[in-house]
Length: 352
Ligand code: GLV
Ligand code: MG
Image (tube, rainbow, N blue to C red):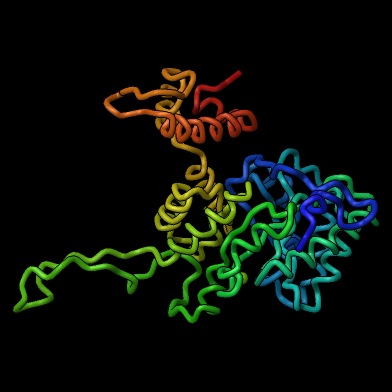
């Protein structure tokens, strides 16, 4: 049993008060960079204004002999580079690894006041969040950090997915979640070597038209093997006011499939996706910003039904209290993006 009144108290003396609402600034792409790479580091001032979230990756994809350099690079970015309105996140090493304690102590100690979110990989249950929660509070208190650093859980084991709702409720620091489809596929013993996306073997098939020849005239469609998990994550996150994200899409050249996957996630409720390559930044920006025509229609509904009540016909479509709320979701998102991004404000006709 936990006293509910304790939930919003700092977990260490001198740590900042937990937030009651998760902030929702533009979060269309979490752009992954390895700051152990000097060339990447040099490009940060140009890249930062083009992305909503810049993430210094410390975990997988950073070679063991560059773990410390990646951490030092991240600290340099936080300390020396003005990122404007772009959020700064990190993905720490997993909790059983030999690097994670130094990741957290050094990064929070040095740039805790600049860090918005810590992505914790391979979260298996609420106990992992409790550990990071208390440790962050102690480190924030020590470093005099005044704004709580939030936690983004990556679900990439079957157990993590099974405990999704408990993870979402584990701490007021839970900012959101995404899937790590590569680790998750391995953990579940799925038979795919891809990072996210569909698979030609995962299909549905129409009924036979000829029972003498079962191959004749059958239509087949590729299905999305991630659909169920993403829908569960969206419910777990949104039920506690946290933000769900689509994870990585590994086939960098297949920008078409990337866009389709991102859009399916957007329609289900995700607010953004990881971008692993500059080519994916624009895809995420396009997909996770609502379509201007849909926004225009949603505004029309809201203007036509100012109190959001009753039943109305607009452009031949039935509108009532519920559709009004759907329109509000669309317009609120467009307004939030327009307030931060003049390009979007122009697209939506929302210039002030
Ligand atoms: C990402 O971390 C993945 O495992 O897909
Ligand atoms: Mg992973």
